[in-house]
Each structure stands twice: as structure tokens, then as C-alpha cells.
Amino acid sequence: MPDLVFRLAIPREEVMRYYEGRAQTVFVQALDGRTVSFPAVALREFVNHAGVHGVFRLCYDAQGRLERLERLERLLFPGPAAPGKRRRGTG
Image (cartoon, rainbow, N blue to C red):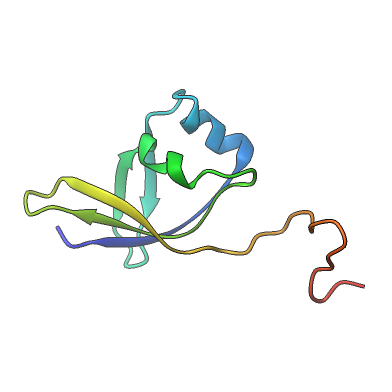
């Protein structure tokens, strides 16, 4: 199975269901339109205070088993700016 690239934007409240083990599987649609699922535990290393946001790649071995999940790029998301910082385009 070829690698799959997809975007994720999961807010903190929702990702906590995965992180705490209340949800076991993540379903995503790849940029090429294919739908795939993978174990939620694969997201743990990418969780931060805002949830999980970015462009990711699922990599598979020759037998079609999940080998690894990689973050390709972070997506910017709306949220509070750091103290003393202004967001571009605001006031």
C-alpha cells in the first residue's frame, strides 16, 4: 500500500478521547480521496495544548501494515497569541 498524506485538525477536547483511550481508531480521508483508519495511539506524540494539527503521512510496510506516522508540516490554527505577541492582520 502506498503512503497516505492527510490533514488533521482535531481540537484538544476531541483529541483527549483518543489520548485517554476512550476512542481506539482514527478515520481520515487522504488528500487523494482514499479513506483509511489507524490506531489512535499513533497520535500521542503529536498532541499538544491545542490538540493535533498538521499534515501527516501514514507509512506502510511491504505487507500493508502501518509502519509509522510522520508529521510533514504544522498547520496554523486560531488560538490565543502568546503574551506580548500580535497575530498578523489583527489590530
